[in-house]
Length: 368
Image (cartoon, rainbow, N blue to C red; front, side):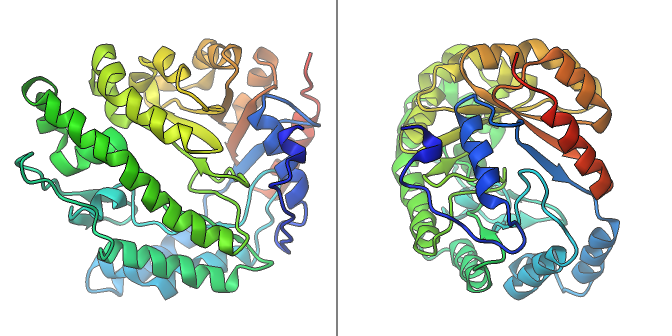
């Protein structure tokens, strides 16, 4: 039985996304490096008025953390964005609770510093003899629960609710310990690094299950910031810290933790953030149960996308699907150079008319 026909699927009726089931057919085909009628595509549009409204709202709070923690405002902000938007292609109406990429470390006692668009953690481990434990009463976890439950109340028939950005493993330990001290630990305290990483996976899976169970009870698929749903358990394994470690250290300390995360999931899309992480591409391709790679090319000299087509072909040849970000003017040369099987395109547009044009062009990009 193919994944598209798997009995674990259920129908999701959304007034904001009437072609939801068809979009999921394309995504499930993509997970298997297949194409039904065209590759999936996600659209994004910059909204200057939206950004201005955020800036004005943030100015009304005594500190920026209060803006992040105002669950009522965050949901209202999202709902305003639903009013005039059409979700074409494989773009979904999705609310995902967000307190920044280090919130998992925050639930171990790391204070989070809140900025206008993201947060970061202040390290707390100074001695491996006194290690923090996961605090299920953390204010951050309580806020994520509130954001999730508020969103679920109004979600039926309107939008999806996802789970927060999770970075376990070495990125979690780097947040707890600090990047530079952790790099020294690979030489000065390698046994402590290995032991600490071993505690990450059970806690991460319990944390993940906490939200997955809640969302599944409300008939929500599994989806997070990448906005690619699964009816099973979808995870975005990542290791941004890997850009600073050797292949030997990656395989010895980091790879086993990533493998354990992936083994517990239905669908994994590895977030390969730039050429530094891509140095470990061969080891990443050996991870079990990874269906796809999100290639993040970077900016400046790392653009345009066409210089990375050999890497993308390598990922395809290894049986992996690929998520790529394209500029609108890169679409045609990319289609000419690549085959469509296993390609998920993310592209920024300025109008709905442009999005319809992209859909038309992608429908002509057929397997050889």
